[in-house]
Length: 113
Length: 109
Image 1: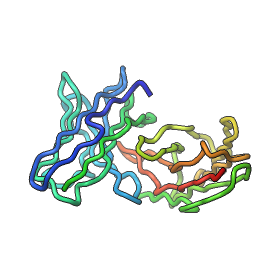
Image 2: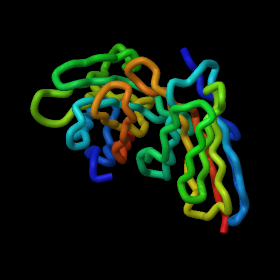
Image 3: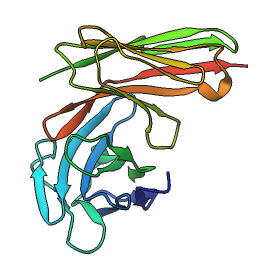
């Protein structure tokens, strides 16, 4: 998949630090989704964004988590004051429009120590 | 909220065997996607099925969409170690896609 690019692939943070995960969608895609996958659990939807707009953030924890997709540059998922329970794989996906099939990046693995 | 149930949760078979995994919903799907995820990687789309009764083939993989569009199956013929992975089904719901927990398949040589 030459499309959705995520970085970093692996990130280690101490409790209380901030984590920033970046996602560049596939060429031609203007819709970005963030999902979280905990060990032995399924993919859980977090947030859906279009350029400069958050469309649906119903899956985002109310505190410490935020997401943006600026006019220029990648989408960013930001986790402030990380806790051990934030350790997970975070996947970004993109699509050309709402309701279309989504294509995933290779994920960012966050470990909080 | 629609729920996707996948079964079995785990499946361990020998190379060359056939297998079927299932995805069932509490309500009608508009469309359904099947993905495969290998350890340390993101899910990779295998197929999208839309029409009730639809059958799609991808080499040794056969995907079926139930007539009532509430269930789907994935059948693998003559499984190979390279088929090992987590098989996920997903359905669009609102602006997002919901996923089942997946079937974890291990094909032993």
